[in-house]
Image (cartoon, rainbow, N blue to C red; front, side):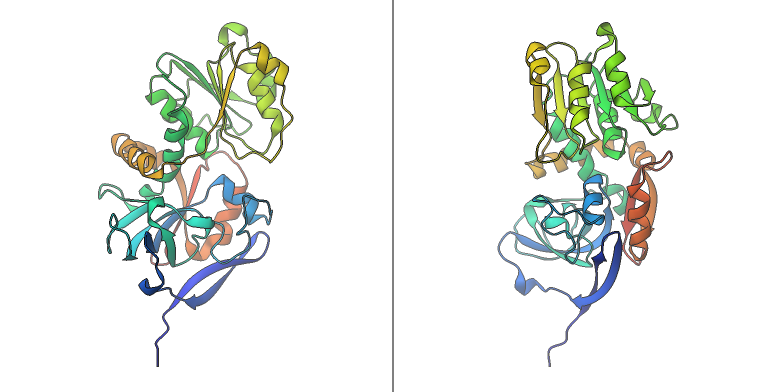
Length: 326
């Protein structure tokens, strides 16, 4: 008789709650060329996971409510591989396809994963994926040396943007958020912290203090893109990074008259930017300690997601670990 090995997996029976199940563990026989099996070691919650956690369905979230969702930032160990670049026993970091990372063993495309350097522990390695998205986005921004950069929203990714922008030579980094980030501003390269509404600052920003680049890292709010148009200097650049809705009303005449540039922050070449992100963390060893503020075992996944869903001072990145801990 065939022996079926059970593994844990989480799904959402209703919005904002999880249920643990014991299901059959996949084996290497199921893999197609270019796929691997990854045993979960740690995973980090992203702001884009929260709408799925709350039960929101849209074209970007087809797996909302399905087993394993929603978690896409993962670290684990290769259990089986049909890819020449990744071998069994190797630690990896990257993206769980379909945000279905809340599983003990995950079947995944290998090109979404990258080997973890031994210098990084599993929890530290979870920071590689979000840093990779920031580096990918800023690779299109041109030279940052001597530029004034403003970041709308100082959540986990907004703070990474301020850190990276400063390390790349920005002369002044401005961070704006309704959450008071004064406790971590200096650690994340923020020269001028604005604790308040983005719109209030954008409408009162003096012309001589206007940023060269505005990064919108809040998401889901079309008015903040209009605020960015108001704030940025003539011939400046706007980056929309926070996950947008399908359709935005946009102040095209103001955008046109200021001769601005707008681009989006979707990452495509994961191998390039996961590699760069890992190197960035090795070169900035204090970043992980500042960034990861809350670590929960996977059995407390409900609590972890609820914590992340409410922005507050002192809480930045939330990480989940395997039942055995890391």
